[in-house]
Length: 336
Image (tube, rainbow, N blue to C red; front, side):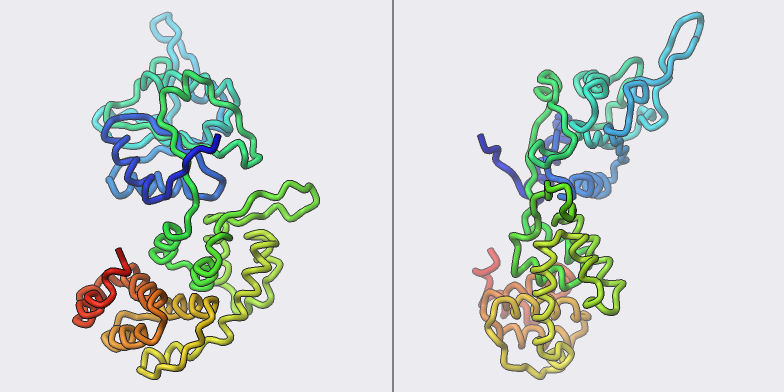
């Protein structure tokens, strides 16, 4: 049976509901899809504390605590990483839950079911979110015990380019990445390679983020093809390297923002590259705003709308520029 998956945008909305109702959540998703990032982002936006525990690295005694003698009785000293302030509010993030051995999963039963483990009680203002990889990802995954699985809401996260693009624009990932994935969104994620002697790298949102940092620090991108293959995998890497040649055909971006509009070739690969380059070069000045709207009219409607939408993610003040209202009247139906 195929389990329906949700987008990052949907996950953010559902987490709000589950936090409000104090319902434990398990986020299922492939490695590098952004599970930890999403939970950290939620905590930051809601101004909540975050305790991130990687359960696959712990033993049961690490959770229950070490026994001690008090008043001639054995008491358990809870670990230092558990929240203790009764007035605090936060998210207890139990990551890699289904990669933890059954003994650790058994130790976490009581915490998820009853908000306590041994003599430790989770403060009322704290909520529990768990996460883990899918069985199909070929990692070390143990089946969750039925009583534990039945006490959580299970949501399956899928990497989708439109969600990743918003992240990439806000985090200022290299425009080669954004342009390439706009043209080939199917390569945002790839399956892990199983052959023992093959390159084990594969494409994920996390690996493209790493590649972006590498590209920003590299003067001669033609010299790092092996690094590209070793970051996003050989198949996606070959496609990416081939796509980079498109940028050699781009018109002068600076000249466009000065009002010199070239004839635009209509090949999709070049148009994606052109839009990403224009977004990268945009500086928010009135001159750039003026010629941004002027040149967007020279592009096919789909790409002209994409250009303005992407720039607004980078610079929200563009929506206050006088030309935006006229543009919205003409193209508003395309952005619904």
